[in-house]
Length: 312
Image 1 (cartoon, rainbow, N blue to C red):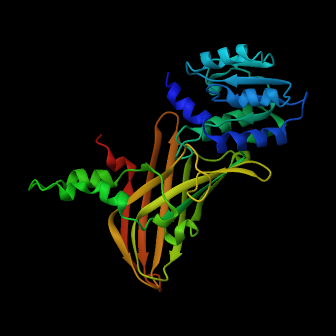
Image 2: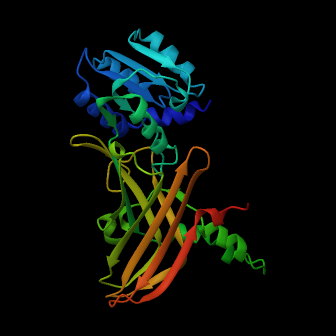
């Protein structure tokens, strides 16, 4: 059991504050019932109980649920029931007013929140119930700083009189968890574009596709793309992993390019992204960087794919 991982979650003040505020806005004391899916140490479920939920169900298949049970007993929280099974394996679950799940990764879908919430919406939620988070928006922004690109292309600087091209190629067909500063990004991050918007009320697909585009106004050298997300938890309450937002335990994702793209005024930079996340096959991401002239003619195209970064 990785208690250190759960410690980092509970030490994330912006995360805790956002979920607590959202639960407080949604729970009707003495009336609302809540399902906390992927409950971990149970903190969200215990929040719901303390906020007045009539009954709370904690679903967790990992051994950490034993810790949650000890916390429940120690704090004498009696309106919480712990269920030691993955929610998708539950037969005939009790219907609830609110489903909450913080199964979000640095890439938001890597913990299979899409499939989990689709199942929860169909089988756990009352007809007029609420899912939390309700929406996730993903953003992409070009990376100007070369610091992470240099880290990945160390193969070119080993001085061993050997060609490491295959290893270099694999390094650049990978996604990396990194923390960006605004100065690392085009427009200091303010030029980020939304490329994917997911609404859990509409049974979203596990395959996501989108694109973004930027018209360049001054010379720039692009070393890849930074990705982050924003989750809508309740009306006017959201949680963001943006480098412009309060830091959380989550970081951004770095998607490199094969060769830095040189752009000048009038050029258009495009990004095409796709991902697939399933419980059976995990998460894969593909991305494309395009440089076009002001007339739309493609000058450069680079295609990267996470699956190329691993040997079969």
